Length: 265
Image 1 (cartoon, rainbow, N blue to C red):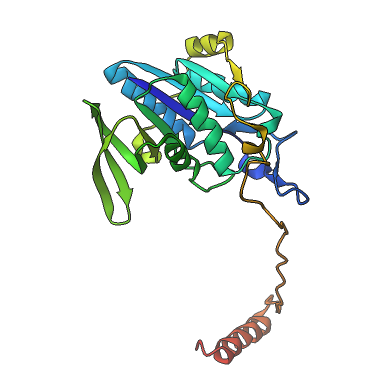
Image 2 (spheres, rainbow, N blue to C red; image 1 turned 90 degrees about the horizontal axis):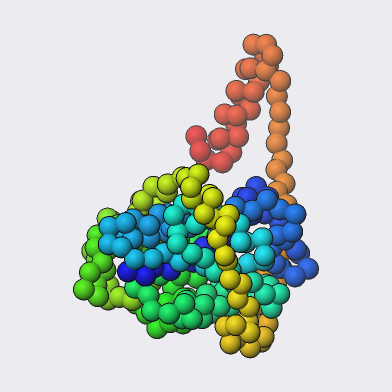
């Protein structure tokens, strides 16, 4: 079984900054980590390989430093990784990102499953996984909480819905996006870290993927962030010192009066 896992390197949640002029995220000088929700996809792929054999390949689109995310995935147990890095990819929206990932997966050759995290914590769209499926013309199951089996060209999965879960039989090859319930990610081992450090990570750009410059990055992105601003929160409040019984009584009377003014009491 051949499984491809697209992963993303994202900024630490507390360090997210946006460029108000371009509407894109500022990534330089910001501590980056593997998208936490992608760790569950990696673990799901590793468990399938352990139970049925095969190979797990991780891919990531990003600047050269995104190679660190690939090495972390290899340290967890992935077999190989490919970095998709090109200045032409900068500023890509979910459409252009899905296109690049899909073309890379196509060039990797025959595969059985593409397993993605539910969403990336820096964008929160959940669109890239289904986008990959669309570009590759593959069936897709989102919010997968359990992969029951993959055999005879069919993947049986449980898919989370509002009132429980659905049991689906999905023809393979297919794209799955998984949620946290699918598996608990393992920690990298010392041997895995050593193997990851020595791993050869091919770097593919737009030329290797046979993609024109106007189809990728900001140029190939049909959506734009047209305005960014910080909302101004203005609150008018009254403060009553309640250091003694008289102050407490005054504060209580005022609270009761406010509640009556708003017909809440």
